[in-house]
Image (cartoon, rainbow, N blue to C red; front, side, top):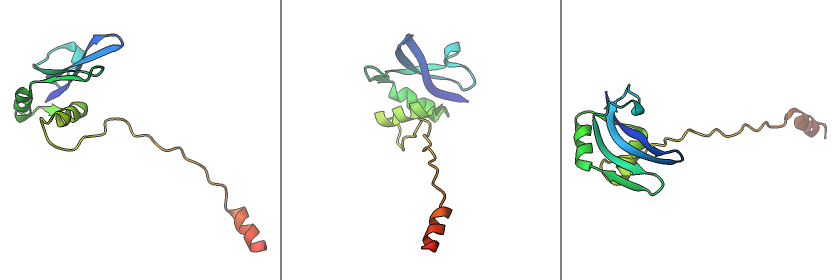
Length: 109
């Protein structure tokens, strides 16, 4: 299955990403890119997408990753709701004091 996802390029501590079409099972750094459809720089927020090419690959059955899907929605290439890609935070469990002594004190009074 084909995926549209990010491929990291750039220097250490200075990320930049290609938006590439590749097989889902292949690692992004291993190569084997079917097509390069854009780029994204998170520091400067520069986005360059070939919208027609992205639509063509989506029509052929390529699935975007969640992050790329959110990027395509924000650029107006596709429509839909954005997906939360960050892990869910769990609220810390606060132990409640035992209510038995409170109930015993209320019945004794």
